[in-house]
Length: 87
Image (cartoon, rainbow, N blue to C red):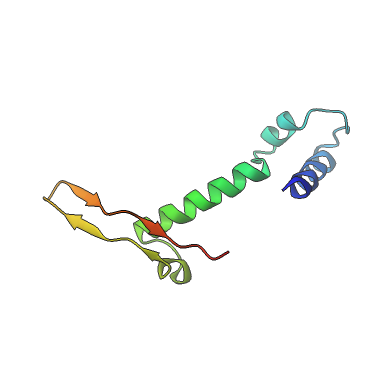
């Protein structure tokens, strides 16, 4: 991840004409870019959300196995969630 973060930092500096010694966090915020680790976490959370709400692409939806028990009209309790993502 360090290399990828370095590439992102270099790209941000090129786009904004920032110097190498300038702090990168304000530059990334100015561009509305997440750091690489946070972007990965966000992407995984977003894909899980899509799987849970039935909005995921077919190749991901078939990998998730979510079963719901309907207790009453207003209460839905999920069983233990197992989401399988390919490595």
